[in-house]
Structures are given as C-alpha cells and as structure tokens.
Length: 71
Image (cartoon, rainbow, N blue to C red; front, side, top):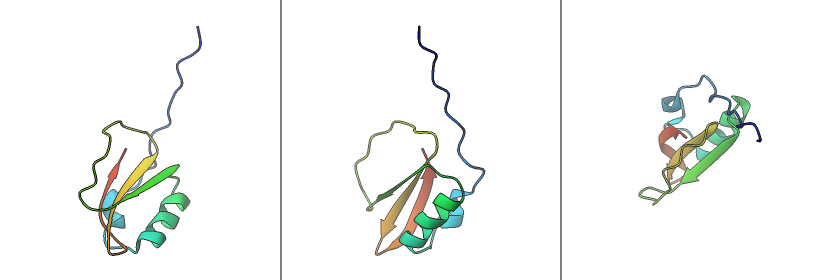
C-alpha cells in the first residue's frame, strides 16, 4: 500500500498582514514568505470548501486585498 502523503503546515504568517495591500504586491510577498499557492477571488465568489495546506486565499476588490485566510 502506498504511503499517505504528508502536507507541510502553512508558513508562520499572519493573513491579516495582507489586508489593504495591492493584490499583485500581496501575491509576490506571499510567495516570498513561503506560500505554495495563492488564490485571488472577487468578493462573493462561490468556492469549494476543501482545505489545501500551503494555500493562501485573497478576496480582492478594486485591486486591493480586502480579506485573507488560509486553506
């Protein structure tokens, strides 16, 4: 039987530190801080609820991050 893959925990980073930043700058900064995936979404987007370790989600409105969360 194949081993169960292990997922690394997300970087030790505060999601609220991205709120208010320009979306492009926030994505660049997230990559530098070790996030493997950044997902930018418009406000009110319908999204799946699966948790993905290492992913940072941005709600972006008018080019600015308005909300940010893990997974």
